[in-house]
Length: 147
Image (cartoon, rainbow, N blue to C red; front, side):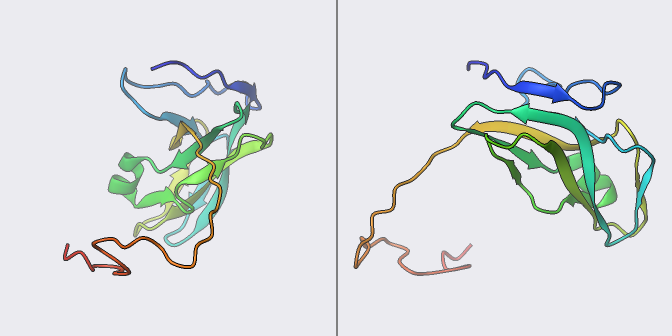
């Protein structure tokens, strides 16, 4: 495993940069850079700033994913999960949080709100065909494999 260098601009100087919390962690926690506490009522969603802008190397993306602890304990998750930060985006990373829980949830400055995974991107070239190769599954859709 080799490190990929990502340029970062810290827009919230008082918040630390994301970091891996264990040796084998895939993601780094993103922190809320809200100016004031943000209350999310049940069913409500909000765009939460992280105080970070990045420049990914070409051929990479950053995936913004939910934190399992927030989902399991409070029903709070990332609405467009996973969110994608493209390599050519230079604006602030923001997280769309939604509260699926039964109680209000308060987002505070510095709170860990999501995780970010940087991954390589595979680009494809379409090859249009009149028919596709046969497969065992065929055109069977949801639940068609019996599981």
